[in-house]
Each structure stands twice: as C-alpha cells, then as structure tokens.
Image 1: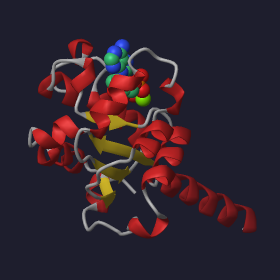
Image 2: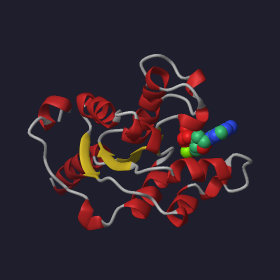
Image 3: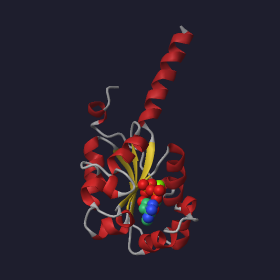
Amino acid sequence: MFTVLFSFFTWITIKMSGNKERTFIMVKPDGVQRGLVGEIIKRFEAKGFKLVGIKMKQASEELLKKHYEELAGKPFFGGLIKYMLSGPVVPMVWEGLNVVKTGRVMLGETNPADSKPGTIRGDLCIQVGRNIIHGSDSVETAKREIGLWFEDKELSDWAPAQQSWVYED
Ligand code: DAT
Ligand code: MG
C-alpha cells in the first residue's frame, strides 16, 4: 500500500515539476522599438504557457556582459552589447511543459534568414544583429538567466484557470 501511494505521489510530482519548467525570454531593443512586445507575448500566451514575470528595463552594460559572457570572445560581442544597450528591453519568465525547448522552436534560428515562417524570427525580422528576441537555450541556462534578471519576489506563482484545458492532468 505504502509503495503504491509513494509511486503515485512520485509520479504526480514528476508530472507537476515538468509543467513547472521555466525559461527566460526577452524582447530586445529593436522588438520594443518596432512595437512587437504584444505580438511576442501573444504567441507564448496563445500556446498555453504561463507568464510568471515581466518588466521593462534599461539594462546596464555590466548586466549584459554577464548575460552574454559565453560570447565574450566573439568578433560581434562589442556590437551585440551596444545594440542591447540601445534602448529598454522586456525580460520575461514563462513556465510550462518543455518551455525551454519549445520556446527555442517558437523563436526560430539565431539568424532570421535560416528561420522558418511561423517562427518569431522567421516572421518578424531579417538580420542576425536585429533578431528582436532572446530565449534560453537549456534549463540550466534558463535558471542562470532568470537569476540575473529577476529577484524571486518579482515572480508570481499562480494557477491559471485554463490549466486543466491546456494539460491532460
Ligand atoms: P541565440 O540568441 O539564438 O541564443 P547566440 O546565443 O548564439 O544566439 O547569440 C546571441 C546573440 O548574439 C544572437 O541572438 C545575435 C548575436 N549573434 C550571434 N551570432 C552572431 C553573428 N554571427 N553576427 C552577429 N551577431 C550575432
Ligand atoms: Mg543564446
């Protein structure tokens, strides 16, 4: 009996924690300037993902250098930081089953020219240096990025009324 109950609760916990995966999505300065914040939010909302954090922010050079630290040696790094400093950004945290991987699929490829129609970059932008949106590339990266851009108290843990219509259980 105990084993059955234990397995059941373990199964429920695994299911629930899957739905609790989080990713860091950010509308870049060009996306904000072009009035695409609503379009981007709309796509994640319509998919069924849950918004748990959002703000508008003029990022500092220090924060952006930490955010993109893996790319520090790349020839485009200076231009990337300048572009990201050129205006406010809209950082967000989205939650849901496989949201990191699915979020990347929704974004398209890094270079909009390689992104399929139907993806955000495929539909809404043209060049890699103006690709309007950022999305975490792994669950580990997402944790690091969420920690860089948000304090715990800025994230809302809430239960959407539509939950049982988005997930089977
Ligand atoms: P992604 O944003 O798809 O995760 P990335 O992490 O490799 O891509 O690079 C971060 C950003 O740096 C990317 O969104 C745009 C810029 N970038 C990447 N490769 C570039 C290149 N070859 N030339 C100019 N900018 C580039
Ligand atoms: Mg990246």
